[in-house]
Length: 90
Image 1 (cartoon, rainbow, N blue to C red):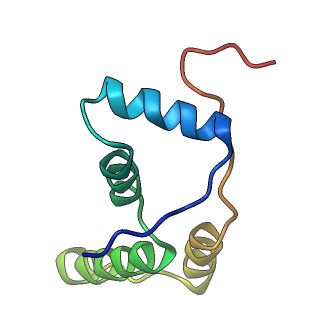
Image 2 (image 1 turned 180 degrees about the horizontal axis):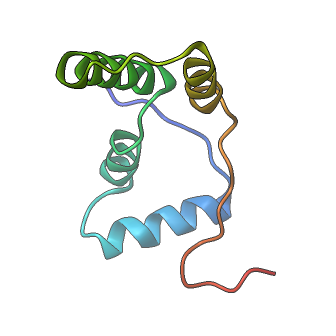
């Protein structure tokens, strides 16, 4: 696979360098691992559909329109920013 470059500010690059080194890998491999650990909205929607199908087949559960709307709202929500673990929030 051909390598691509991304632009990040110096502070982000320094942090990526440190994190990659602490994990015994390169920045590229570290970023690939981070990206691989995240699911896209389409992937979450597929998981939701599979789960709904399983619940229907195994337990006869059929989601109400309100439950589907709530699930859709959750799937399309904006990501929230969380404080880092172990750090005091300012």
